[in-house]
Length: 276
Image (cartoon, rainbow, N blue to C red; front, side):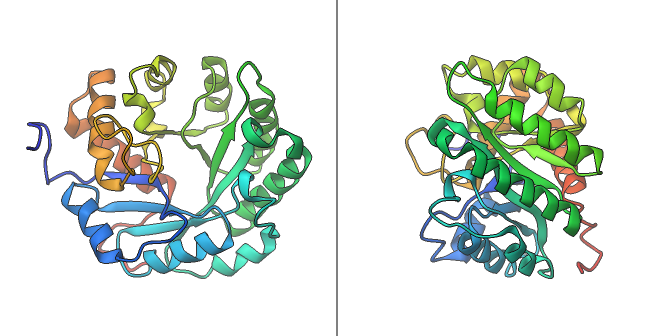
């Protein structure tokens, strides 16, 4: 039974989803499930060249699905690839961003120098291709090194005109404030619904309205009441509802605001204009 606040008239935008390691065997069913839940807009992220290629292929079949191409920091050893190779995606009609890229010292701190090199090269690629960047940043508990390094590189990126979103942001309030000063967008996902995630809710209360995006990070981080299940863009309304309750907004405002922000961030033209 659907909750009272659920509406098929939603026009939500999932700004960060993955197809998973095996891709998506039934693209039509995957998209239909999202659309029927009120999530017709989706940005699929790559984490290496092959997953970026699969995201591009999926997006080519649906008018309101777009994709990003990039190399996740945890994949730079498993799937090493030069940023220049990703220029092959520049001509794709729904190529909207460079990502997912960034720094992850939680699991791979020993590769810090390589991560910095790769992150820097992909930020340069985003500038060359005139696309925003989707940034992953994670550190070990009690450390700010990853956020410090990311801030240093993103300061230069922003100074040169680059735009970026901090996906699934989980830094401190101080981190939020310094990235906010750079014009960062912030991705709010299923963690905002987690019982013990008071730190995420404290951040979500402070995200600037005009730079707040919704995301699932599917197939990971499914929101309550779907914890333990494989996440899907169709679960985004539950994250939107939790954010609306937290900020004291109506669902209508939450949907309209975050979808408008996403279209502006990814530079998506009106639906009646032909995509080039």
